[in-house]
Image (tube, rainbow over all chains, first blue to last red; front, top):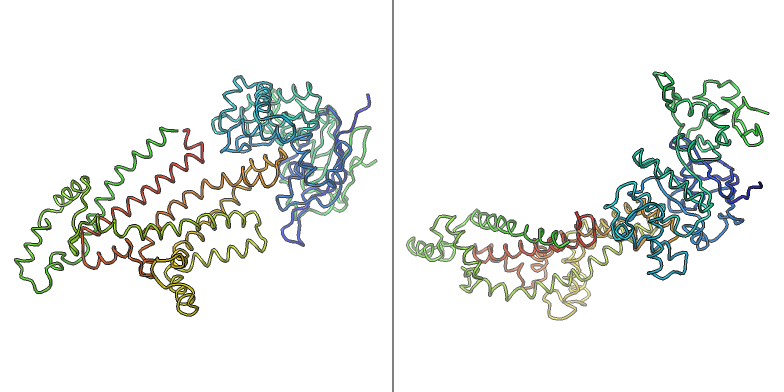
Amino acid sequence: MVQERLLTVNKLRTEFFQSKKSSVTAINEISFHLDKGEILGLVGESGCGKSVTSLSIMRLLNFTSGKVTKGEVIFDGEDLQKISENEMRKIRGGKMSMIFQEPMSSLNPAMRIDKQMIEGIRLHTNMSKEEARKHASKMLSQVGIPDPERVLKNYPHQLSGGMSQRVMIAMAMSCNPQMLIADEPTTALDVTIQAQILELMKKIQQEEGMSILLITHDLGVVAEMCTRVIVMYAGEIVEEAPVEELFNHPTHPYTEGLIASVPKLGSGVKVLPSIPGSVPDLSMLPKGCRFAPRCKYATERCRNEEPDLFQISANQKCRCWRQER
Amino acid sequence: MSRYFVRRILATIPLMFIISIFVFMFIHLIPGDPARTIAGLDAEEWQVEAIREEYGLNKPIVTQYVDYMVKLFHGDMGESMKSFTPVSELIAERMPQTLKLVFAGVLWAPILGIFIGVMSAIKQGKIFDHVCMLIAITGLSAPGFWLGLMGIQIFSVQLGWLPSGGLDSWKGFILPSFTMGCGIMAVLARYSRSSMLETLREDYVRTARAKGQKESLVMFSHAFRNSLIQVVTILGLQIGGLLSGSVLTETVFSIPGMGRLLTDSIQFRDYAAVQGLLMLFALQYVLINLVVDLLYGVINPKIRLD
């Protein structure tokens, strides 16, 4: 089966400017793609550039000191970096929508849920207020909210975290997007609620055939949800692989470390392995491989030369000298 | 919602009682003997004693307080010890001038202040922001009465464009209204700017943008309204302070309002008038803060519904 490309990110570089001249590169020329109907995981520790990647795609960085300085984001045949803000607004919340880590603070506290949902729906459809309200109610029951009419009349502080995230998902789904960016959608939720939300996202994804870019630091979530995974480290992609490959044969030492540090039941291991050190400060990156200072395999070469992202098999890539082909 | 409102309104009653006790006590702490002031310095001791008797000043202070409160509830604020007219009449006569003055300040200052603050936040770091904040800091640092005096010096004395006192024509309002409002405008500009900046960093503002909402509406219907929650509190404190702020402005512009009446009464140890005025000032402060709290409930559903 030939997969159709929905999103192609090509050598995207995003910098944060402290002044006109000095900047920190948060993501450095990353390239990846997302096929139609696919769930792609974007994994890494905090500060590795996952969220910046998603905000760069949505062009929501313009309101911060961040700026995309290079590369292209081709979505549905269009380069999102080239279109006008007006055209971009039609895509945001329309063909491409997003849900965030903190559902409670992502809803406007001074506005009832109905108003917030209707606002989004009417921006991208020709529905009247009443039709939009009906649609919102339908969306809420679709995301498993038992009494949508009551929730519509509520203010965000009257909802629990899980409920809020369901509302966020309903809101994001209300205009039938082709692509959903989910930025740590379950991180702020209780474990039982996490499972429900993931289940829900998977169900909707299958029914609607949309694509999801799932950003998370939780490998459990990745294993559960994704077909393909991208591992990011310090603003770069270090490994890309189908999910089974990644878990069975991780090739990058960082991925290896991430997987080893997931607790396993009945493994008899008393002390959970961890990766020593922490993500480097982006303004003081080491020379050579960015992971070298924390890598147990690091050699002199790693400390001096930066490796490329090597294609090591048909669908696996790895940024490590040990995988040089 | 109505429960919140009723609770807030009821809470003001004990507050007013406590304030009345303080007002009453503090006046009696002012050094000087009102009976002696009324009788004159060369009056005989028995004459002074008679005046004490007449005004009930020889009774224990608790009895005096109770007497005063009982009368107050009957709408009687007592009689001025200086002009021998009822205090309520004195106040009623002076009140319109002060209200006009306060209104002239309230009319433009908060609106302009909030507008400047919000626009500065939106244009953070740009020239507009810097200029506005320079104006705001100047307005904050310069005392109102000094601004008033400078205004008189420039526009009345040197240029002769505006009258130096009185509220007889619309021209007369310009300088006093500027003097009254300047501080409020500056304070509100600062507060609404920082509040708006804080709100703009909120997650729900990002959500609104992610929906594809227009930037102007993101600012107005999502950010601005939430930033008002903090600003309204400050607004109440500022407007509450206006009436007492009128004391200085009225003195500078020789406007015969309640502020002037207060300064004159304090000088004469006119207990009844001072008490009446202070109670009235306190009452308006409490009322304005009540209105602010109610407004707060309207803007912030969290408060209204919990």
